[in-house]
Length: 319
Ligand SMILES: NC(=O)c1ccc[n+]([C@@H]2O[C@H](COP(=O)([O-])OP(=O)(O)OC[C@H]3O[C@@H](n4cnc5c(N)ncnc54)[C@H](OP(=O)(O)O)[C@@H]3O)[C@@H](O)[C@H]2O)c1
Image 1 (spheres, protein in one colour):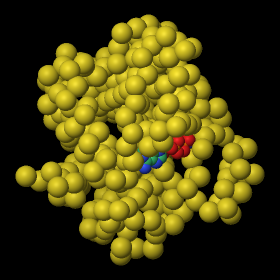
Image 2: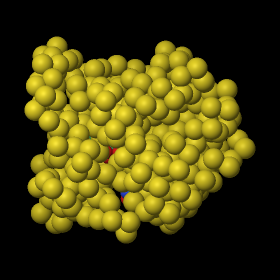
Image 3: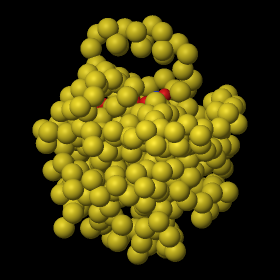
Image 4: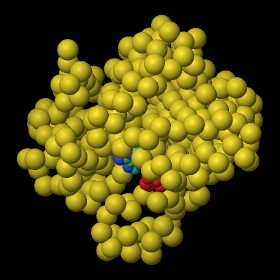
């Protein structure tokens, strides 16, 4: 559990100006990038719906080839046919359930063995669960899909990516990392000691991903690889479909009515992957295309290093 000293430290580090910036950025439109991306390869997880789907289409519309990491074969095949027919680019896919360790390892191994350089790697797949669910490996599901999968894939791709002239890794994160307002609980990442809540597990997994970004940024220093995280806006997607009928009814009738179109997320994700304005920028958090200070716990290097070690242990990568 985050100690009292951490609580006090974070409390002192919160700034009203950061909250005001977030509110301002939440109302803003993303910057638009008009660059051509012909011949580039973009890898994206969770491209079968929502933000991933429109982002795949956006990159394809600018000429990029795609490699999508999805869990559903039928949807992946439909996506492949649609994109290849409409844009004349390649849209390959790999099937992987990013809640299952064996699948995460298999897909990371496939990517690492590829000869073709990856120009942009977008970790987008995500879930929101109102009830705690365990994966077949015994981990809390949101923690694995939202965080550990991206950690393992990035870790196993480090050598390949460092050997390339350049690559931009983009973590589709969230302002929801602020739900973990008083920090990560490295001793209870699996939600065994605390009362589980949907917002709590989501915020904690997104916070973990931001903390891992700090260490990946260090690891990639002096190479052509950058790693940034972004909030894609509050947009209408299929998120939450793994929950019960009451949540789905509430989402459809209340939450969805307040949300924007995920086209804005796709514009921002294209800008972050293709614009010259972010060339060399790394280790930063963006709200769409506006650079923003994340919550203080997301900048805690001490916890970031602790989490890194725990993640290696959980993933069996310690050796
Ligand atoms: N929507 C928002 O307002 C919002 C705000 C902040 C952050 N985000 C983040 O944006 C990202 C995309 O979410 P979204 O809103 O676009 O939701 P979505 O429509 O539900 O899309 C999620 C994507 O992830 C895939 N996915 C889910 N679990 C997976 C698993 N175990 N293995 C492999 N793929 C899996 C889904 O596959 P299927 O098609 O097979 O279900 C789908 O392609 C998430 O990381 C989310 O946290 C969203």
